[in-house]
Image 1 (cartoon, rainbow, N blue to C red):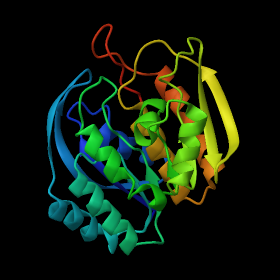
Image 2: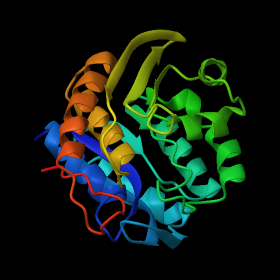
Image 3: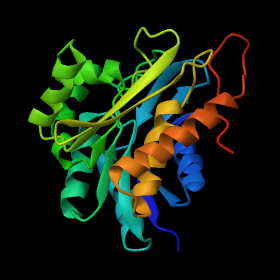
Image 4: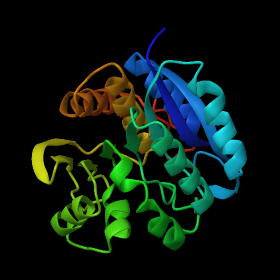
Length: 255
């Protein structure tokens, strides 16, 4: 069977982000996706209206049901929603130290909707950071996690907090013609990429990128190669994105 990525993520009824994005991106990477659902959200492709988080016990029961059934190589997390769920994931990861772990520190939806209490989530994420093989924050999340406005200082602060590798995604920065991503390992910049900034906003791009990285890691790629493959794939996916509402966020076409 294909190597498996176990995703801790929320249900997005629109199918643009969350666990559906994880499943599609991991499938496209060549791996298999298993899901431990963290929350049921109320959202469409343009806006988050609310959510109800899974209990810690139910979340762990989902994960433990598949851990001896499937060839899990990597864990990936997106929306966790509550500090209890963050604690549950940390407990699960410590029980399975051989799994690699991709941490996408989701705090708010791209539309700006809340996916949990940001202040309490930021404090709780401190427990997960040292457990991660790689973190994939956008610059808004990076500043929130570290309290630093300067991106270089913020990135180094993550390494002081125990990070091993960080992919800083620059889509929220004021660079009208391009987006710059930078990969750091053990505090040193390993690579940076610049791609043309495409028109519009995208629903689920961050989920898709992190999940594709996880899928490539599950198949044995080193971090740098996994990130390279994921960035190349994502750019094509976004170029083909579909527009459900004129002038609104686009949904990546992952197939």
